[in-house]
Image 1: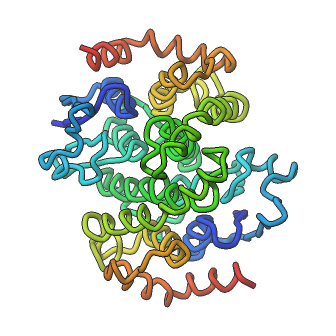
Image 2: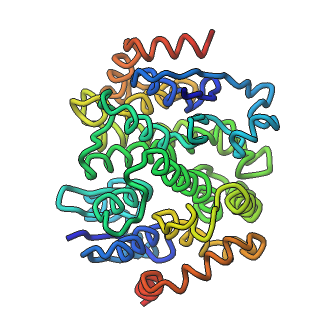
Length: 206
Length: 206
């Protein structure tokens, strides 16, 4: 059985939702960032990066959201969560998820995690102040150049959708108006109504 | 035929080397960052992100290094550049590449690209000063927890190797002593001797 380590409000929710969408047999264990559980010796033995998510499988531990999402799509092919038989289409899915991971998530992280990249309080404040602009620009680019509709990749729901949704939940806190990107705002509403998403959003707050 | 857009000294070299290792029929076009060619209207029509690499295929354009590397591995299976038939092993390859993309490359980017995330010169200097520490910590983690040897994933050379090598070429400029991570230092030497790597390193400087 698969076991997911996650924390409330983090990108780990994308994997959580994808496991649920896939119909996987899994358990989810919440870590408290407030109590710094991600840096406990027990958890560092699972994921030496001290981050979430981590997915424990029968073969070993996987980390990094784009890798985990592709893994779930490949191991639950009946759920049709990615175009597994077409390398170009699959690469487009991966490209979208890599952009979320390495650009969008990173921009967001500069609001609260400035200490990863700088030392001075003034730098943290400076970084934090720019987040609405960088996150707004990313979502505008997604809306105009990447999002096909009704789902990210078009007619087929894929692993891109829970990942985009997860990052969309951060917009309000980042002072970005989701309605400035109407296609993504509509996607957010439709995602919120999916049983898998409702279940995970309720579970992570319980 | 495939066409790669790259710039000297960037992560695009990982894709360039992988195309060469795969024996692909491709051309490579260099952009000058000094002349801001990555933001020219012609290039933005190819890659609206204004970044390299971009890989033009018969089906359309691909961006984001981890997606492009997996695509090359999947479309040139005889080159055996990834464990394509084992979703768990493939996920480990993808996890490694995602870490390089979203953590290691990002740390490096804070040396010269601080304006992506902040506004003040003092913040840029603060970010720049921390790069040796963050890059050193990443390479220590790779050395101790990820790198299997003789190649990143063990006996089999994969798409992780040119990507790690590409980021290793940044260490000297980032004031990180590669010899602090002897396995990676040895990997760097062996990679430097590969014909594909020599060819690309020469071509990008020519």
